[in-house]
Image (cartoon, rainbow, N blue to C red; front, side, top):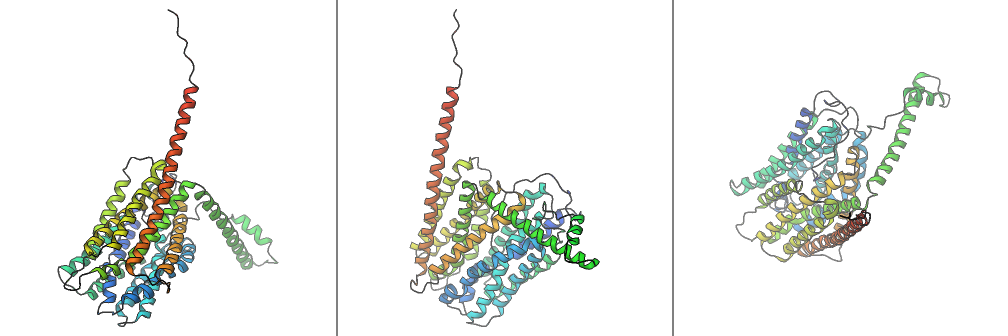
Length: 484
């Protein structure tokens, strides 16, 4: 299950039932969704997945993992993301969340029960896992369909915090069990399966929204119009036939209105150059982050000392997640004119990300690599937060799933292309360190783009302010001195 790292929402109009569509209040559904998010991310085996799969339990080689197993998630995401995005709103979120929980549980069970050395079974498990990961958009969008708009900002913080807390708790628990109690990795896998089973049970008790979020404001035709449409049908004089004809016409007309609104929303949201640049960073940063996160454990396995070394992957992941959460919260309190300095901020810190990845490529010390990855993840979470609330300023609340889903899809397309070139190109056969050098160069190009864009925006704004000041000075009335 991937991450959508956004924290702030734009308050919508103060309308709607303050107790939500079900009249049962917003606290209950929010609490259930937070418990689901925590359990779904509380997976102690996650930081040690590569070590488990390449160890005696599954006996897969690092070459099989990097070139046959892990790329399945990337290639599957690009096939599954668009269909899932299209049906999420139509199914009203809960069924997608249940399917996500079921896929997460099934994928871990397949990995746990698969035979040793069976790469095909591992690929199947990761394909099922990818189906769950593309359903992330339903997790955030679900709660918006149940709570009044004035609660959006608060509940977004709750459900995002539950994800981060669950991931940090799972990584911490995994590290404690491995380094302190010397628990076998297969038992960490069993704990993860139990947590995912609890998440599935909670998902079944989530209340079903009465209507989808995107259909608000796109009410169907009135009953009279439907009857009139039915009367125009081809000889339908029988009641059930007329009703079926009316329903078909309403469905076709709603699909037409929905398509027009989707196109209009996309045109509106991406018409601003500034918003488009923040969307570019969101998509490209997501691509780079998940590419690094997918293969960093393989790099650490290669950098580990050969004898009597206890891996601290869980501690590093937990520290990086908590640091990134703190940085994301802190950036919301920075007093900065983001419209002017936002691109410079992104470019400068993206350069630090590039430097951290470049150092991971150069070093042979796993401790330096651990520190660089913690810095990389914390900075990514912070910068994604900046992009998220800058993009959100221009969106209606109903468009969050659409725009962030499209940005995620673009990021997946980029990641697929990067995986095809770096991982699966037979003629290149790049080593792990060379792959991370390419990732560092990827973020370096992104940093250069945003620094250049940011400097241009700052100079343009400064020039415009000077011209406006000069124009105001010229418009001041002349003061004639009075004679004494």
